[in-house]
Each structure stands twice: as structure tokens, then as C-alpha cells.
Image (cartoon, rainbow, N blue to C red; front, side):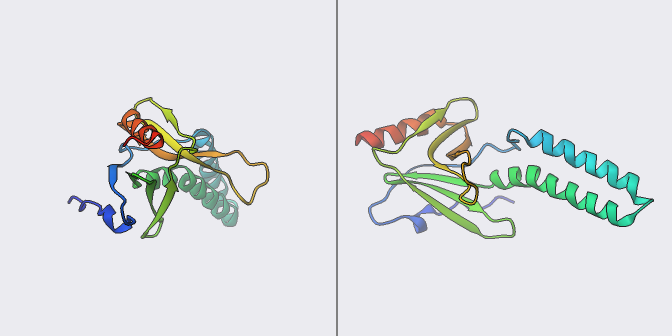
Length: 167
């Protein structure tokens, strides 16, 4: 069963027009470090099985740790695949699904001072903002943008033209 098309117009301000909309390429994309977390999860699961006969509580703790690592790796990747993107003549919109239902709209204004970067690989990435963990001092910034899209070069060109004043 196919999902109905997303109506972005309910999220637009007066005078705002949609120039592009899309979604990530289907599939799971693992971030750097994900393989290490999956390896740790397998290690915890194997140890949970070995300790199960000797001590049930240790097995439960190891199994819970393994499940958490699997969610951190695969669950986040699957959630990212359900995102929706839109580009208007004023801002970039990212509709982020929540783990237990619902969605959250993130809006990023696009102006002449906005730093825009392009990763033209296939699938590509166009970033237009950066975020860090506000709870951790000296944290590394993470690029925010349209991840894993087919037409990254075209989207990048649209944003650059907007910044120049020629839509």
C-alpha cells in the first residue's frame, strides 16, 4: 500500500514556494563507527548466551546492552530513511519522524551568508547548517542537510542561485 503524497503547503509561510522536494534513497546507511557498535553488540550477545547458564541477571544486562547498541546503529539508520525534505525560496525543511509516531519539522533559513556544501557522490549530500551536542563542551559539529539524495548537484545549484538572488 502506498503512502499519500506529503502536503508541504501546510508548513509554508505566506509568499513561500516549494522549489524541490525529496527523500533519502531507500536503504540503510551506517555512519562511521557503526560497525564497531555492531561488533560490540555481537560480543555482548555471545557473552549473554555464555553467562545465561551461570547467572541470569548478567545475561539480561548483556542482552539489554546488545539491544541498545543495535537500536543505536540500525534503528537510527532506519529512522533517517523515513525523513522527507523540501526546499523553498526562503528555507530548507526537514520532516523528521519520531521513534514512537508523529513527526517534527525542522526549518533552516537560507540566506546569502549560509554556508552550503555539496558531497556529489551518489547518493549525495547537501548541507546548509551545523549542529553540535549542546550538553557536551568542545563537541564536533555535525553537518545538517539533505542526506542520501539522488539529485544533490541540482539541489545545491538551486540553493546557490537563491543565495545569488536568481531562483
